[in-house]
Length: 189
Image 1 (spheres, rainbow, N blue to C red):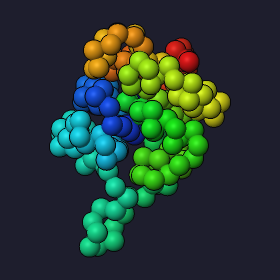
Image 2: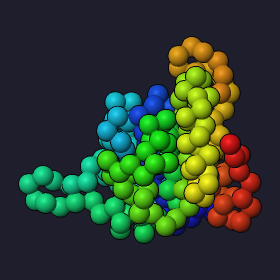
Image 3: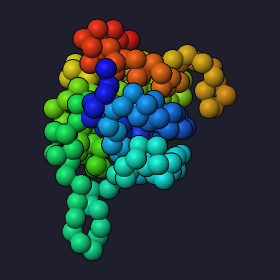
Image 4: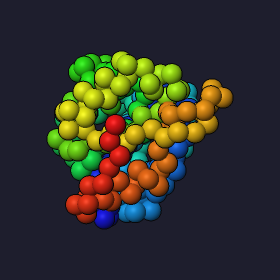
């Protein structure tokens, strides 16, 4: 179902960013084309080299390719290229930016330009996840037509136990396969 599908994988700053490597590997195994956009804070958790190796494409992080040549990553072209935009993990910061139209990085510019379906897999600590502001942002994003892949209950990086774990990569891939096959069985907030 994902063969030749063009997937943009946005990776945000979260300890769950390590799961992006597994997710990329599964998408490539399913024969999808994967273009990764890494936020600046995400690179503190996982390296572009790891994700570029797995996706077989350079990882994009900035608007420009080179400060000297003036080459840039065209966010409009990226948004039109994609069959799906998946943001996993989606941090509280990114959810807020998306819900309110803030556009201060390449990933947000691609999101605002994209015409394809968007899938968000939030990941954050328990108290952040249940905060009314985060819940409100998720409702706003869902009202825009985005699919929220609800965070799971479990042990969190803080040592707390509760809801906030990013859905497993296998589940995210299954949701994408369902979408492209027309099954559309999602876990909404």
